[in-house]
Image (cartoon, rainbow, N blue to C red; front, side, top):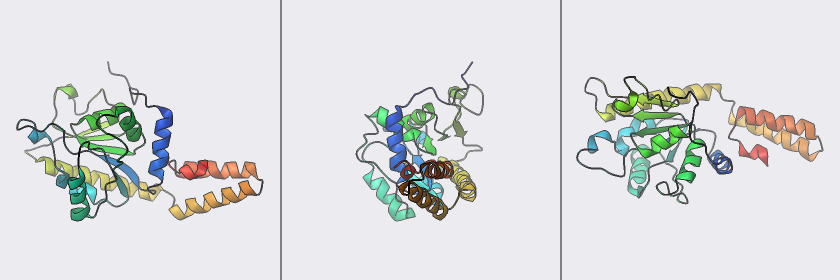
Length: 231
């Protein structure tokens, strides 16, 4: 039997908190990690992976801030996404996504969602309990189901009726747009959060520690990635 626990990999909590704080500085949008290919592409494996252009629908989604999870030299691909789709994919040059697996897992644990074909990035994200949407054909790891039971937070998007991976990536993009729109509807406005934070800070400066604490807690409930409420 497979465990119902959402994760089986424990991320170092201080590192995860640092990444949450760092991601919070990027704005209120959903933070979505993206990997699009394996580091080992052969003629046999090529058909299982995408190129960054296949993710055009996802990459043009409003209300999403994309984080690069593709290891290796991807400067040309990131430049393509910027020029073709107007999307700046954030890449943290101080994190080696291939060799610093502890750091990569901490970053992934702080994300709202990860999109990936069958790559190590997607496996690591799901192991850390991050919601992960996997673009891949059904294989033995699904053990006859439409999911992967060892990864409770993973959703699998598979090709049907001869679909190309580009078409499947478009379906993922459409699902991401629905998710982002629903999140935007539920989320308080950034202006409201800023006003709440300013009021809590004023209360703290004026000596009203209890009132300030209630205000900071309210900000964190509205925006759990608001690192400013901790300082």
